[in-house]
Length: 262
Length: 96
Image (cartoon, rainbow over all chains, first blue to last red; front, side, top):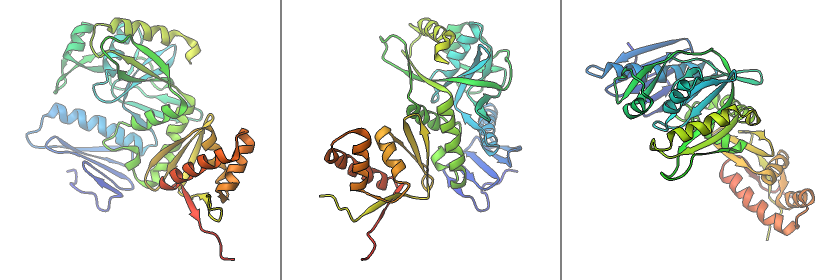
């Protein structure tokens, strides 16, 4: 059984409670999950809840919670490998992370992770671990990419794909945003300060970095500022519809292959 | 008129990191981040030791070759932001 409350949490708000070694996440009517000591995850599904949604929430939030307990940074993003380096595409839900990554996999880039990039620091290098061998796509995206899969239990489809290498050095992050319908896709490099702000907001947890326990703040600050110094962050802006999707992918591939941006 | 009896200094609960010419500052008490440009970063570093607005303005004017009164207005605005953000504290003048 997963407890409803932790004994004396340092943080207790909405769906989250955090104590020294425990991290409790409660999504009402779906699932309750508790990460303990960075090594175990206990899950309890709500009676009558959707099991697929429960599993997905438990595993993504659970991985994020355990990663954070281990001193890793769970970035809300999907990633491929390009020229032996990890490239992450990050943004809020429905920013198009999985769709872009699926299109790049179709273009020959190996999949590294979908929806959650677990980043660890190895001295001056930041590395991304591999995720599950699948991407979750909305039906229109799967149809546009001519990819098929099974229902993911919500409005998405889970498309199985092969994974590439594990534990790959991270070289770039693309911050995803949608521009106006008629605009051409553009890529611009963010300043280190803009990069820091973007990465700090991109944590894949049900709570922001600023709400985590006080004792974690200096460590997290050091981690995200180190990432902002070491990794180039670009903003990719493109229309939301699929009319210029191929143009976006062409621009992105050209940018990915240009070593001047490393 | 600048009150030159008040000194300012970084609080112990603030940590900062260099991002090229800019600086990011974290208030560990409330988790808030603050971004400082090149001139604000200079002032931030000077605030490791207690300083008055006039002292900070003079140093800034010397290093960046700007009129001291122009610097003073900017330094006052910056100090207010830093105090409001909880990363700098005001130190009242010691009794004579």
